[in-house]
Length: 217
Image (cartoon, rainbow, N blue to C red; front, side, top):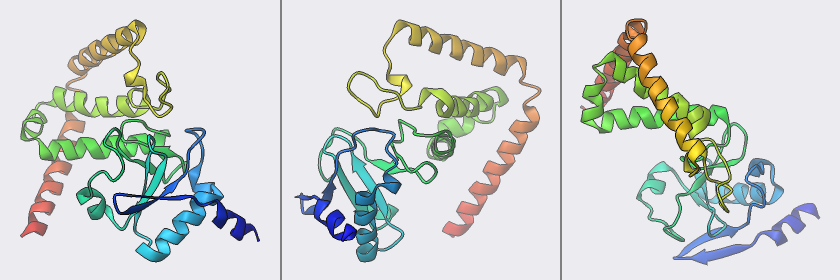
């Protein structure tokens, strides 16, 4: 009887030949992974499209979509609107997060680190700059700063899924300037202390690069 009621509450909307679940999140801290409606919808999508799919959420249209895999997600254009990026369900806290607005610390560190590594390999200039220990330290320290504070979720105006970096106040801007200057100062003071860490990072990056080149062959 309970499953029947939940099934009746599933509200689907078809847009651009794609079927999405119409469901508005009242609070950004909602654990969608434990929501009975989302769980019912997600189980149905997995049965038809496979367990390795990716659930996405558009905060403007309040629509959930399910892609079969990451490749389908990348090649699929925005289905509903072009105003916002998709949100995803966090594997740690079960909440919705965006790549520019993190829900919890674990996910923030994971996503920020992955984006940093990807940027390094996709940008030859950054890759060359990594040869300098001080710049290497700045890049990786900035990654953790993004995860700890800069990219954490915060309400800005009417956007519940915004981040601290979007706060346009003089106090926040002053804090950002002080943080950047402090980061530069510390990187110069402790450049030799972090030389060992720098060498370890370079070795790891070279091994990953060689591994990827070998697999391509």
